Amino acid sequence: MSLDETLRVLSERVRTHSSSMATEEAVKTAVVLPFLRALGYDVFNPSEVVPEFTADAVGKKGEKVDYAIKIDDEIRILIECKPITTNLDKVHLAQLFRYFTVTTAKFAILTNGRTFHFHTDLEEPNKLDTRPFLTFDLAEIQPHLLSELTKFEKSGFDVGGILATAERLKYTSALKSAINQLIENPSEDFVRMISAGLYDGRFTAQVKEQFTGLVRSAFREVIRDSVKSRISSALADTEQIAEEIEEGVDEDEIVTTDEEREGYMIVKAIVREVIKPNRVVMRDAKSYCAVLVDNNNRKPLTRLHFNRAIKYVSLFDSEKEERVQIESLDQIYDLTDRLRATAAKYAE
Image (cartoon, rainbow, N blue to C red; front, top):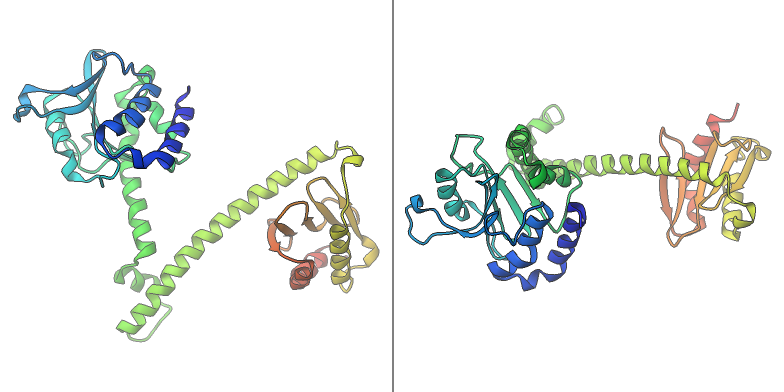
């Protein structure tokens, strides 16, 4: 099983069976050992994956680290496991901190089976940084994670290659955390900076409270608009591909529904004040019904996505296609201004 496949399996396991991982041993068995195996390490070879690793020089008799990973006979990665209910913090780094100093380890992993913290010594040589350079939640795998974890595979383990990106990851992660904090709880200084030039009066407690809420809402809307724009762009690209594919679809496979015909007639009635009705043509496809000007694919008025449980109408009055959800055909009339604006582009 590939690393990608294993991550997906472990992610599902954490989401559905986390209640069964209340002990360190359960976390090790269910998550950590399969994770190490996916990275190419022989978890059944105690000379490679050393369980309950001890080092005499640590100074605390009997203190152990859960696992030490040896590569080319040298300790390179230390791993400390905690129950899944543990909120990982600096205090849990104590053993890793001491062992990192007295071994040849270059990386240390602290995990509760769901959250993973990867540490190294960017700030001071041979001294473990308290801030991780890579953090991830196994239950919510992000797209960039696989490329970072492949650097830790046994077959391509490269200390220099990992360290080359570790500093960027460390500070990027910290900045993302700070930005999220600003979104949810904007500081007074930030609110003052953003609202400077927008409000000329005294920045009283009441004004601060008002603008704090406005800044929080604006922040979220900017993110939402950005995501919406990306999705619309992706959908437009997908529809273009679908359109090219459907050029070869047998016409017998295309069924024009009564709803599509009615929707077409509504659109035609709406734009008749802007463009001659005989120029408005319906061209049905398998995944949507297009309403075009001059029967030209490059002159779309709208697309009726009615062959699904949730209905959408595509609008083309801006640079990119935008889908608007509707619950009834009557709601097409609410889009009158935008449909006429699109028709006006083709009026000449």
